[in-house]
Length: 284
Ligand code: KMH
Ligand code: ZN
Image 1 (cartoon, rainbow, N blue to C red):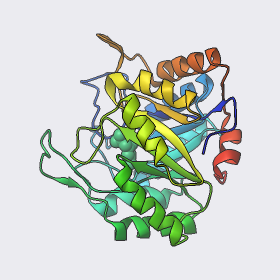
Image 2 (cartoon, rainbow, N blue to C red):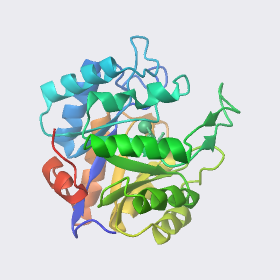
Image 3 (tube, helix red, strand yellow):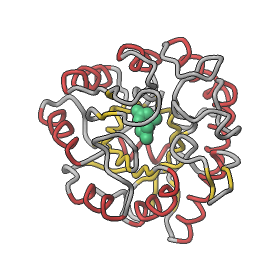
Image 4 (tube, rainbow, N blue to C red):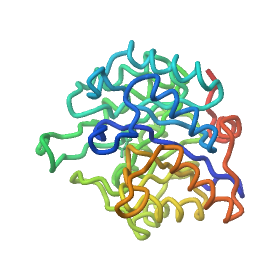
């Protein structure tokens, strides 16, 4: 399902679990940095910010208290932006810690729709576990708390779990799927125009879609995504280079570029309010 003609919902993925300041000094890790980045992205035209929690050392953190601190800090700077917390967490977090963000009562949260195998880095061989029984439990909790799930799909095989939630009434329409393209995990598809088109072709009914593409694919593949009627995600979680050899200066810099391209295509960035109406997000 395409977004309303001439509109694009832009998500800024501020930090993620892996990118640290050694890789790019602009990645926001502490609550006040995250709040400032959220405000700058809102001013640049983003409707949603996707946020992972970090501890004082910048390591992925999975406590309700830290997420509540981040939510308060962001709301203290920007009352309008939609806050989406990550249940993907980080490799050092337990399943329980990954979903602790829900207890901070955000408006949206990510919901990873299948299990992937890490093949690189210190956690090679460790699964990114998202079993159907867990996905169902998290979806039920989100539904009960009016938290809109963004269903993270790394390949079409994960559409089986999307349909399972729809069939069991564990999520409410309109449904929202994020094509996560280019992750190095086994089970994830690469980021290319072909994989984007195939993810679109097999998308279950009544699903809006967002396009996420990692590293150098972020610009071309998200641009294609907005032309195809989708929402787009840009940010330091997925890409630390603005162009070859030039590090990104801020998450807002990536949002500004997406807005420039959209406007050239006669597409306007949706405000947070418009995005809530389109996606059925309850304001909190
Ligand atoms: N790691 C991303 C590419 C999540 O945080 O739950 C997908 C993601 C998932 O952002
Ligand atoms: Zn994430």
